[in-house]
Image (cartoon, rainbow, N blue to C red; front, side):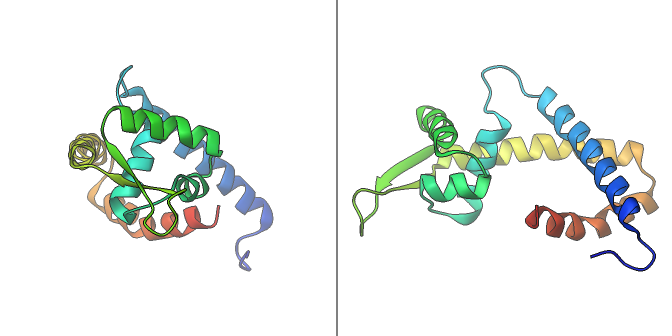
Amino acid sequence: MATQTTGRTDLLQTANHLRITLGRIVRRLRQAHAPGEVTLSELSVLGRLDRQGIQTAGQLAEQERVTPQAMSTILAELEARELIARAADSEDGRKLKLTATEAGRQLLAGRRSETAGRVAAALDTALTAAEQRQLIEALPLLDRLAEHL
């Protein structure tokens, strides 16, 4: 949906710039991940269970946009670490319902705090107060964009 002032070429350039910039941010956040720690994919699934509550593996795979096989691998690792729990669905015993455990919620709280602290420190040193406000104002737009990808 291009406006009169934003042409298709401008939108393509913006999209490419956004993709590259977000990729750099994600790579930098991943670089802080030490071998043996919970991966970003695992954290994403755990966070979704924490925010949205009980889910099935199929629902999680769809929402995370991964294959059922990839989700099975993620869930097996989370379960081995006792960060999630599985229980039979009361209406359909063939289905398994997944929830975050207390240990999972505690891990999320710690990681969110650690990562948020790193990002906040970078925001404080890299951006002026006015730029910080601009970024804050842009966050709802980025969230809405993420929902349409």
